[in-house]
Length: 250
Length: 246
Image (cartoon, rainbow over all chains, first blue to last red; front, side, top):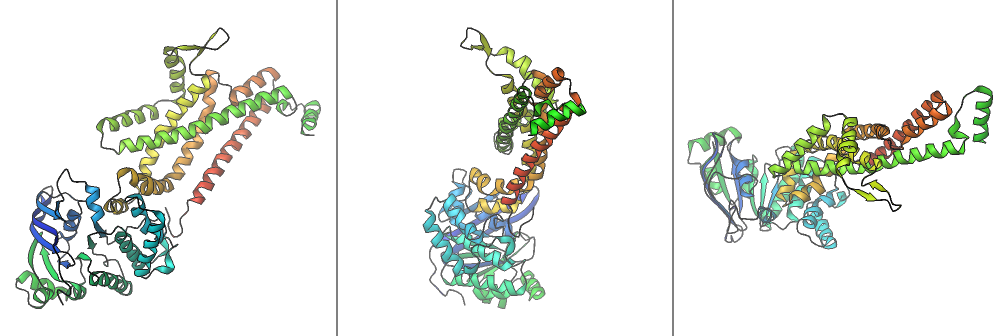
């Protein structure tokens, strides 16, 4: 069900990116393009560099070679304001990483107030709407430690959305969740994608990837082995490695 | 009532708690208590400020800043506080100019009490740097990463995320150090600062009630530390987070 909506201009352009930690090469000649409104899923075995790629896109991890352009700006330009870049990219982590000393509502409100210096009353109104959107209207005053994993992850998604990012990155966001709470989070992401948010997902949820993705990339050993529409990659993989991986996980 | 009881105790039992019935001794003792409290409060606040500044520089990008903090911590942590105090009072003070006291005489720029506060703040501050550092290192790097991803600057990150969490983690160690600081203030006796120990020794050398004054002194310090522990306990409770354990 690719291209349910019109895709816009490229938002993320990754070209020939290499990344190594010491002598260990994590990414080799990785290129991909994500257009506005597109949902891209990156699948592949653990240790294939998927999470590293996401961290490179928002500048948390510097790349060794190549180029990453975000909304036309080169991420690894030393002169680029990294903080401004990160405001445009929302990232959601496997371990939620909420601020444990703040309530759900405060978690969502913090960054717009501290980083964007927005008006508190406006931010609060928006934060309430976002938490309602992820189904957590009843948990505004609850601390992360009292929320379930799935609820925490939905707060984390709302927290990223509060910054009005141009693109959302999801780094194995359901890997630590049980099947029931996993569903809540996946539905939230699916709604986001349907609304036209640009999303890049690193995931092990093959069924989900097949359903929501406009484009799927299969990575192994730091290289993109193959990519294409979900129908192509899942239904009729060209590469032996892709076949082998999918046979094992599906 | 209390005074007459202690007067009676002295007359009949020979237990001379002069601070409880003699107005002059009581006033000397209370002055000592006030001086000690003053040194404690100022040194506690200043040492925590030093600890925060130190830990900020120690984790910063400036090499000079990191070096300064390392030298400071090593120096003040590895030398005896009595030597530090003497160093400031006898060596550093003699290099500073004196000021007119308004009565035709000259008085030192910094008083003995002032030097005591400076020395104890630096002494306890060095330990606080290490205590805060341990607290900051215990904040999960993933939490820090989340804040960075939201575009937080280092200062915003420290103010809103790292320090609030680090405080909760390092509070027991901070408690220990501040209690130690309160007890260390008795060293000011050595440079003639009229704090509690000094006042007590003045009294017992005149009244010859060493045993009684020793007991009063010990109980007074137990009380002082109890107040500090109570305040820190309230602070710790006020920072407790539902569902979160440090």
